[in-house]
Structures are given as structure tokens and as C-alpha cells.
Image (cartoon, rainbow, N blue to C red; front, side, top):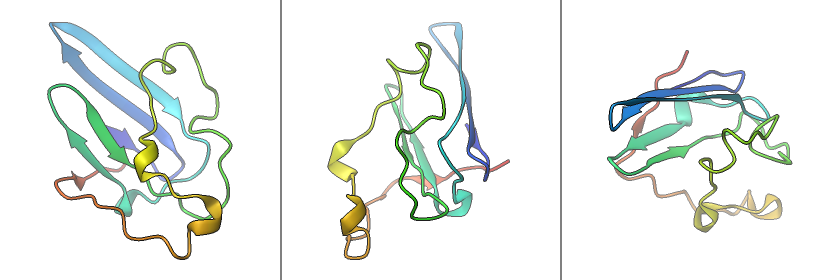
Length: 101
């Protein structure tokens, strides 16, 4: 898994012997050092920190049929724009650092 400061995201792996790949651009820039990922046999969880507090209308610059069924938001961790200053720290226990590009 790789994400760059500019918001380019790549994931490559295998499942049941088949190659899996997800490549897309996020809506904006990402703070790679504060972003984290956790891989498991069933799913992958990402905590992507934006570089600034600007509002993203969507996660991806261009939502496609290749990513739509697989990229989901965990709404239980969502912080509304007007709650950013008073938000509690997100629990990211068990999530290792994300390699950057």
C-alpha cells in the first residue's frame, strides 16, 4: 500500500491467487506521516489525515465503478467540519505507519 503527499493512492495484493489492484487519486493532499493503515485477512483500514482543514466533497477525485464497491467510509470515526477543533483524538490503536512515496 502506498500513498503520496499529493494524494495518489495505490494498493496491490492477491486474493485466492488473483491479482488485486486499486489505484486512484484522493480529493486533496495527505499528511503521510500522520496517516496509518491496518491490514487483515478480510479488510484493510486506513486513517488518512488531510494536509489542511479544507472540505473534501468526496474521497476520490473521480469516483469510478472499479473503486465504488470497495472504498467505504467508517462513519463512526467521522468528524464534522464544525467539530474539528474540539474533536477527540481518533483511536488508532494497532494501526502501523503507512509507507509514503
